[in-house]
Length: 498
Image 1 (spheres, rainbow, N blue to C red):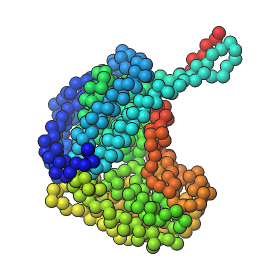
Image 2 (image 1 turned 90 degrees about the vertical axis):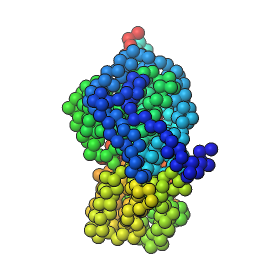
Image 3 (image 1 turned 90 degrees about the horizontal axis):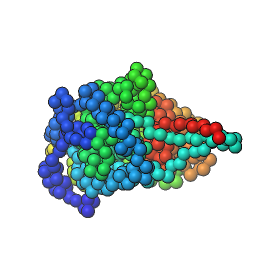
């Protein structure tokens, strides 16, 4: 039914939507203790969506105290995994039942197309919660190989209080990748959404209570990084902090951990992912479509965006003509229109940041061949043309730095060795893609690229069964898959003499 909704339908729903901007602590919707709020503004038209509770250290202290009390009580942490699974499956059912409201909140709050919010964001969140719930009672502990008169048990226990700080580009999905395994393991969770897109997190907190997650176990604290985020990172009773966002913030969180209780810090940080196309790619048309989608989907506000396109010199002209044609199918428009495939940039600051990189690209001598301009729509808002810079060089800012917008930098290469060197010439190592029909080359690049994810003859694919995370300054630890449980549990060795 949702896929058949019209532009008019979504505009009507947006006009009539009632939005709660309160924090959610201990099962209750509450104001910040200070009474302070901040406006969350829609990037579609600049209108104020809600005044949101601006939580700070006082709210963090209260939430952590209640989360710890809930954990120590065993009301959730000591439930059998199968029981926690049933509650999480009910939580997923409630997310699905409220998918239109959640998708609309996501679109209004951060500007993504409503069709993507329904398919990618709702779909991804449901898969994360359901898969993780189903997995938790199928993960076994171990018995060590010992002599006949000893038993060595290796068990996993929940860490305790988990703080999750999530970004604004995929608010629901990024949150679900973290709270799902954390809750499934029996932890208490405090979720701090980005101040740029806090609304779906607040709604998720309310649905979690309705599903039967006990009070104090799942708390939502909207606020700013320098207030609520910093307080969580420095708190002496937060056991683990998980984060998705910029590399600079990830580094600062590690410093805060060292200054406090050495809490575990797991981060998924920046990316500047290489997307390599060889002359023997199995289908240049598909590769061109993938290259365009890899930089335009979600307005390029994607940590795995294929923002560095490496093209073999012998096919460069032919292939780039195809890329330019493919990019022409991606056009900025009102995100409430189901036909729109490029929405609004999240806010004016981010739009200006992307525009400043476009100016740097021009100044540094790259060849701007497509786009580069702000798009003026009748609604106002923050829209940008998908953009291509060709003849880019490795030293340029547009090649080295994460832009987080629909800006593609294209580099020529002649040999495999040159391509691999260009791939790894980055402080980041999150994702990568390679198009080739040569099996040996595919394996060589899969092994040689220093990145947590390598896609061969496709881009940005995978599901909940595969881990997500990066090398180098793209962070540590992994979301998704059974490996995610490692972040939310402690390993205990128990040795028994018989």
